[in-house]
Length: 221
Picture 1 (cartoon, helix red, strand yellow):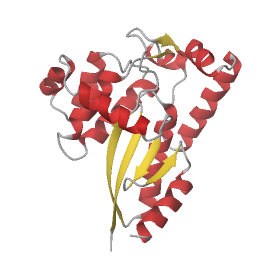
Picture 2 (cartoon, helix red, strand yellow; picture 1 turned 180 degrees about the vertical axis):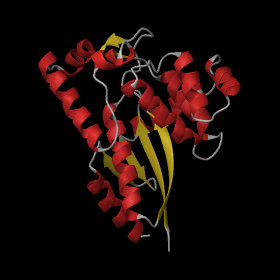
Picture 3 (cartoon, one colour; picture 1 turned 135 degrees about the vertical axis):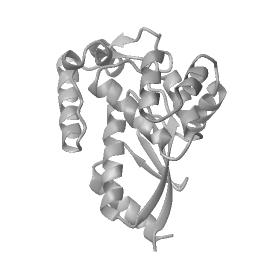
């Protein structure tokens, strides 16, 4: 018998630990095998008040978390190593170019992801994964409509419809309502992985942690 689970993956496209969490979750699902999951990517903005031009990444991190530039660099290297073990390339700022060296506002990316959820099976995930790669690997800005449209087309979405979403305020209210729902649910950091709307796994956990939790939850159904 194949167990079926609903997973709400609350995250931001500029959150490196969300990439690690998603990769770990996917590996855990593959290890279990006889598990059917329905993943919904839910919005969370790490920096909702970030201006369009963004902020230089080291400046932002040192100011926000009160750490030194050396500590910020060490954290980035640790994240890069974790990503490499999971098959994802995190480019350092000097490798990726201008985009990766800055933190951007991601609200429009979340609007596009919300729209993609209703466009067909697998398309929202393809867009999410594409946005992760565009920003963290290729150094492209997730605030740029040109970048968002490029990634949407590569994900198999209709570029004309995607442009119409971005050039309007479509899904703005829906995204804000979902963000507020998770804030009201006491989620203030991501990734937050919510299984069957009841079980919460927080942070970029290793595959083993997700695997154990998924096995326990699926066996209790």
